[in-house]
Length: 307
Image (cartoon, rainbow, N blue to C red; front, top):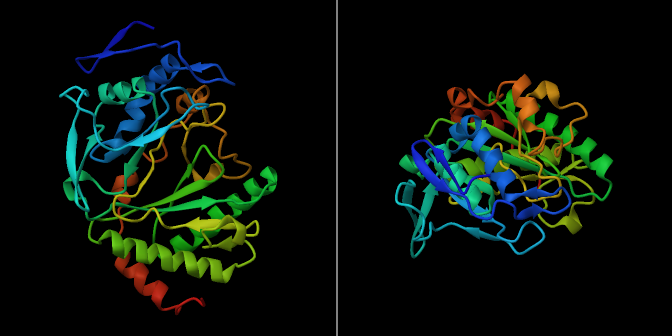
């Protein structure tokens, strides 16, 4: 790989491309840079306009890592940044609107960009609601079976409430279900709805589903994590590489693909074979934005779930 790339009319320097980031697979920083360069056209619509938190691994996945929210002073001035309020101050986040920025972040050993559920032009009103389905058992095959079952259960409930559900492998153990929203409600309102729905689902199926955060209390059940639906919370961006052996990729998939699907099936090395055969199933997610109001009324009509 050359020591710089010309992308979007920007010259992006590439340092130490031979550095191994994924030791078991022999995947280098140059491989990571090339992956993000190639996937940019598909990935950028899911990043554009959103504040990013960078999960960086300067010494590879076997070394220390850190989350970085503030854009350092040495980042080039052509990178889009936005000052985002926080308690007691503000954070200057990167907003990844172009391929040059995505490649620049990869060269900083940002293996996984995480994004807000709202856009920077209206930070207080999310356009995504997310459920993170996390199995807690120690039997991988059973965990995969149970988390697929949970995904169908959550989808069916969302559809019964009139809400569309989009599915993504996390590249880890579970799946994300995402509901696109019109930007009318606050984070507190969206999180309150997600919490109520998760409690209802867990109450209806206590053998398989739980809202218990502590793994010791889950007893092998799938955790319906609604907590990411808060202000300044982030989620792994679609098509992001995960810092796990084999470099799995968080991949949007169709519901017709769920049977037998391993959440770590797609990787940095096989994702482009998939994209050559299938269009991005989330390409039109934005046009499905839905108002939570009617769904909230339907959910309330069922009564409060037991504690």
